[in-house]
Each structure stands twice: as structure tokens, then as C-alpha cells.
Length: 220
Image 1 (cartoon, rainbow, N blue to C red):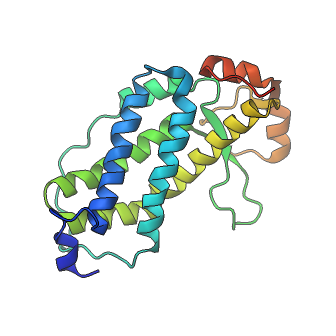
Image 2 (spheres, rainbow, N blue to C red):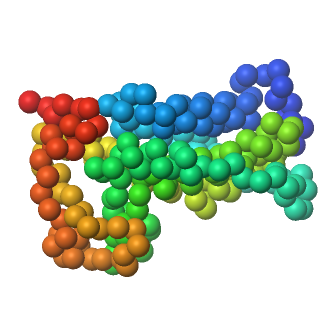
């Protein structure tokens, strides 16, 4: 895509930049609403849907040729908006299942899983996307696309994929009425642990104990 095409976005809803920006904006608006907690029972399903749709935009960015910004140095987008409120709300809404384990690189042999928090990950994703949106709204379309593509590879893409897998796992355990292992006492401040340690740490929690606080019923 030429630089001229990247900037010709104002009146063309089929343009790549417009579509990506619309998906990013839709995600930011939706997750902010979910974080309010007005429908706590739908938090996990809503997040699963929104993360899945966001990853479609990420996949398009990943498949696209490298986007080169107009300027050698990134223009200053100003101070980053505070996301602590959103982070704390999600930590409260997802408290029974907020901490999960993830392997950062599935192609790196013998990589031990490490603990992560869905609430922290969502805040990181929001921060990355908002950063690019500032450029987009300022008319720096190429810069916005470059940032979204770069940060998709370097941060928010892998993070969103990990969150999606965690959310899928929660729903699978609840809907299929399967026991869910709880990482009892496991926190993100702890050092990486192997499978045997994770198994030792895990306690057994029935699916309804997770689904109850989230307002979901296990499958029959």
C-alpha cells in the first residue's frame, strides 16, 4: 500500500487504515464498558468476543507488508492516559480466574510457564492501542498503522492471544462442567515454575465455584 493510499482514509470505509482504526476503536469502547461492571455475569463471554475481534485486526496487520512511518522519529503523542482504574475493575471482576499461566514462546524448548494476570494484560493492550489511536486522530495515519503493526508483533498481539486462550479455558471448564485447577497462592511476583510445581500448587475447584461469581452456569 502506498503512502498516498494510507492517508486517503477520510471518506473510504473500505480503506485498510479506516477498517483497522474502527476495529481498534470498537475494542477500546467495548472493553471500557465491560470494565464498568454493569453486567458482571457476562464479563468473560464479552471479553472473549472482543479479544477475538481485535485479533482479526491484528492478523490483518501481521499479514500486511511492513508499514514505514513518514518520519524517522515518532512524534510525541503526549502523556499516556491512566489505565489503573480499568485494571483494578477487571481485577475485581475476574478475581476467581484473573491469574493464569502462560508460555511466552511455544517454539522455545523447555520454556517454563509463568504466571500472568488477565487484568494486567488487558491494561497493556489498551495502552498500546490508545497510543496508536492518538496518532490516528491527529491525522498521522501512517504513524498509527506503523505503531499498531509494530506493537502487534512486540506486545499486544502475543498478549491478546494469551488472554484469549485463558478466557477460552474458563468457558470450557464452566460450560463442560469440568473441574478447574486453581493456582492457589500463585502470583505474578513469583519466579517461573515448572509443570510439577504448578501441579503441586494447584488446588481443585469445581466449575460452579468459578462460574458462580462470574454469573455463568455450568453445562449439564
